[in-house]
Image (tube, rainbow, N blue to C red; front, side, top):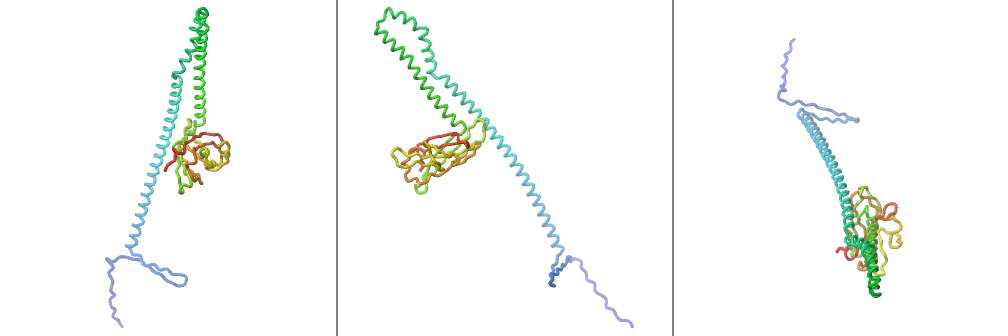
Length: 297
């Protein structure tokens, strides 16, 4: 017995996108399915390629910026070295200028001439004057001679003392220079805020560390006590515990700031003194300012 068979229809899949279905089965029998088509897979691949390209671009850009940063640092160090060399040359020129100015002072040469004149020219005059001049004239000559000898000696003594003071001051401040000091009232006039610049002038361009204090001295007749920032016991108007000061470390320069509290009336104070000490307790620099001049509104 022959049965009639119906022809099976074949579906034409041409032109249709291929896809894959993924099934995820959980522990409790839950099934999750999602379909991944060819277009979606291609999109994921393209996205991954773009992301990798962007990452490579950022890496190259970072390397380029890091190279530029290293080059700028090198130029900065070179500029600092040039500046240090220029400062050394300036210090040498200032020393030479001071020596030349000291040698060319107008009072030094006449003093030597006055010392030589009594040895050569005045001895014959004294021999002749014994026969011709009167005692009154001798007294006048003697007084003139003595005044001529003592005058230059006093002037030289004053010059030497001023030179000694100047050298002592430069010996204190040959590594650190205090500049641009100013104070300003804050907190409704109950405190003073100060600021000054510390500059490293060490001829060897070494980094300098230490501690700073600002002492506010009352005016004459004022009942205000002496104020200091940071606080430290005082002896003869100077701080005694150096390590309580405001620490600093400078290669070139630095601005130091601080506050003096409990100031009811600024006009009761006369001077503001800046003290700079080394970590060993040696005084590196000191400078006195008039409060009325450095006060800013």
